[in-house]
Image (cartoon, rainbow, N blue to C red; front, side, top):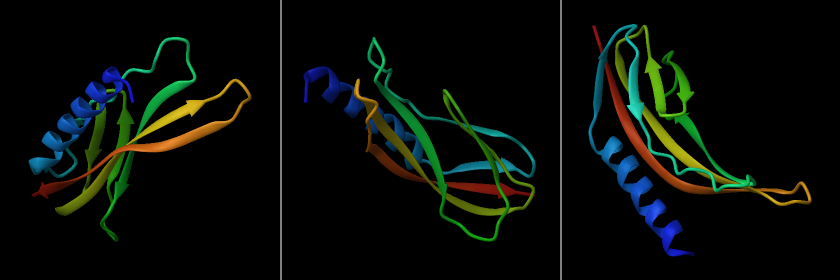
Length: 114
């Protein structure tokens, strides 16, 4: 691992940890933006990062969209919602092979209030 990769990894883990260290609260049907820092892909392509949101709750409707700067979430139902935020590192060789490795993984909690 290069020094640059190590610095990127520490800053992403810090940003995701900071986001997940605090609980979030929002009103019913209000969009909430949760910022997540994702490293830049290296020049020339074949190396990039993607964001994945995994709901950990069941039976509660929630709407979310992944955007370049993070995640937008909302729900029409009051309650507590737990999520796992995963940043994946995707690399592609010139032979069309693809490898995906989990770069970071943090949980967060969202309170939707009346």
